Amino acid sequence: MRRRIVAPYVVFDIGGNKYWLIAEMNFMRRVLLIRGIMTHKEYVNGAGKS
Image (cartoon, rainbow, N blue to C red):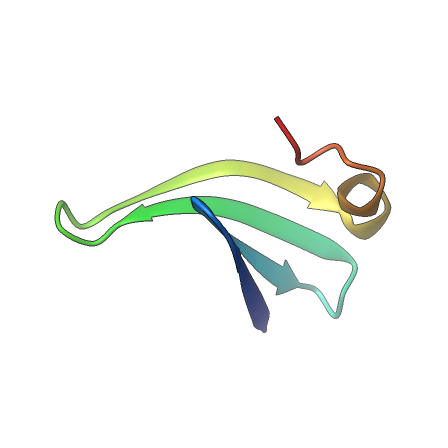
């Protein structure tokens, strides 16, 4: 599993570059918020951008 940081999110490559999990982490509060799960194509086309 690869990951990249796209502040304030952490983007995890899951499923052999087929799917992306976008999460927001708060280490002080020990909280992980999943902001989205999408295909590689959706991610590349900008579906993960606000």
